[in-house]
Length: 241
Image (cartoon, rainbow, N blue to C red; front, side, top):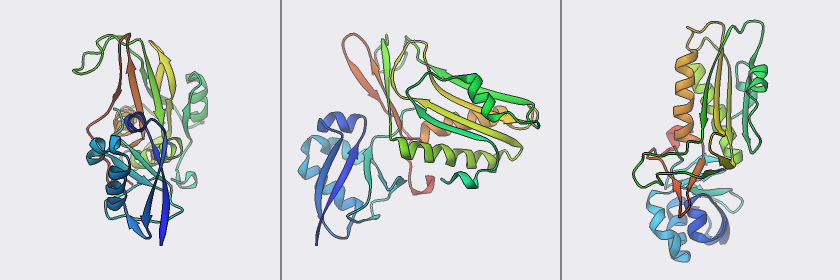
């Protein structure tokens, strides 16, 4: 029996296809490997990117052998640049937003009588980039996210942090999307603890590093003459679910 799979595209794949959704027809059941082969034939502009593409099925990282069915939500995306809330242990706040980040609000969401320290990593847009292949002068950035999956991965990072740093009391992770100007805040990772020496600094570092590995967010560097999607090197697998 034939089925039609709708595929969501992000970042460079969306640019290659000239749209953010495509459809392929497959015999049911099919695998991710078969889906990619059919996609390469049906959409030649995507073919060069497919060997390194990451596939998510129902917001979970998939393997080549993962089975596909007609009602699955499938997404293809490049490596990212740079859950269930009831299972979370302490105060949390996760958000993908186009609004200006209010750090006081985020800290308010984490504060409790047993909180004595909040360590915060704050990323911002810089105007100069010293990385090969990217514009040397940045006018602005554009951020895009696979929003439903991104928030689920933020929740996963929180659970990973608590496994490593059990004295951490609260976690907030916020990623902005859309057009961001030089100096705008892009990312916040805030870690609350009773005292500063209870893993808060280490957890904040782990949180931002892990966000850049598994949370599906991409940025486009834009200067006067060109724009380039920034892709990372880490390739999530089923082990990152």
